[in-house]
Image 1 (cartoon, rainbow, N blue to C red):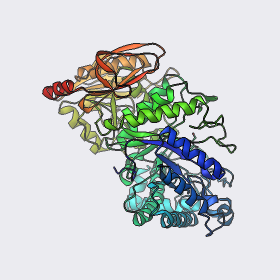
Image 2 (tube, rainbow, N blue to C red):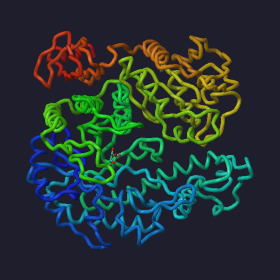
Image 3 (cartoon, rainbow, N blue to C red):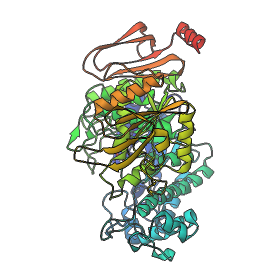
Image 4 (cartoon, rainbow, N blue to C red):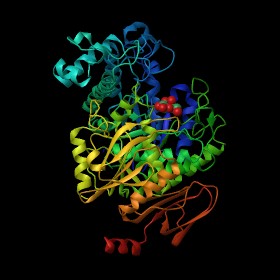
Length: 640
Ligand code: GAL
């Protein structure tokens, strides 16, 4: 993990699009940023057409003036390479670099993200603009971080993509025999006898091959990663002292294995937009933050974008109530983000996202949101001292992008939304007052309890690691569909869940999905039934629970609470009051409810300076961050 150069303390700011404004607005912007305590802004994310209005002709003057103004105002810059939105001239000149959908439709210019990451012309244009920016701004005092691209995720199915896919498969499998075996291509006469016969999954007559779908996603993740790495390497050569990152977007449509990408960025940065309007937004926030921390290997990371106010929900935009922006930001910081960044600084006058919220709304600085932004800046400036204290979590939930992708393939017994399954487990534990880490099964597992929600794909190695974890005294809760298939998506035979039957002490003969949800015919093979749909099995020194039916939220919370307690993890707390403990005795307490609550706690609130001795009273919507007092720290040290 490397920190934006020259930024001391937590980061605060957001996407700043000066190319949309006149110069007098820039000066007001810098003054308003200063008043709010903003210290970092993302500049140039979508400015390609203003930076290179014609091929090879650069207009850097305006950006020079913006960066100078920001530097003079004490605001650092995460300078973006604008490659997420090629200019109109590019699309006209290189039509083969426009993306093609699976159904063969070639998309045209008019929005953003309209390119094929495998097209040589696109890659060359990206290298040129990134190189030009690096050359121009390498020594600029405002430059603190390179923000490569924006939210990699756009997919293409064109012939460039096909050629690259074949190259990836050759490396992955060595020969066609291995590929045919992995894809079970004997089914429906899909046996391949030459590489040229293989294409990206495109519109076809009926169900596509699930192995091909899964590998295309894996390939595309690597293909996008190579596009990132290409830019990163040239930026790094120009400015070895400036860290480099790209902002992750999370969603079922995103073919990016973020855990793998984390090895290639200097700082994990995520964008997070809760879609729920109720308390679900807080649960989603905690989930996104815990996921980011997992990708960062437990190290600090950065919330790069979130909405200050209006957020998109499936039906309409939803306004964040007063105080909610600060509580969400504190939840991210509590869970390891080194700051809070927003999309966006100033609300635009037009364009597709004209009603998206901003720290400076259309109403201007004389507004509730900007005043709250000033308060948030003050909070964040007081929290620098917490930075670095590890998050205390003794429960882990596994997260596996490939299982998500495999479960998205059509032809499953019923549609199962992997992300929703993992979030249900996380939500149940969040409600039970238990802080969780999200983990990959290749990560170290010091946790007392490991939850595997619908972890569909398990390699032999991963299954062996789980077996060893439980045999060594770990507690496991696995839910339906975990370990049913190998890493290629081939079903493990002899009864479900093939890879975990012995640990769980069950053998499932049949899936019995119905309109009421998932259910299975489970034969006990050593385990005993705890309640309908739930079994428990002693295995070595540990315990393994199996949840074979979809439980409602309340029942799920009960089962996970019991499993957590059985593993020696304290569970409980006030519903809607989020408490996160950090090493050394730090406590973040956020009351997301509309009533006052009390929780046992002690320390000094760093936000207000008020001492808390035994009981912390949090009025509705209030928050506190408690610094341990010296005697508390001593007592903790003695206990340890
Ligand atoms: C992000 C994106 C931003 C903006 C925002 C709107 O995903 O990076 O550019 O579109 O969503 O919520």
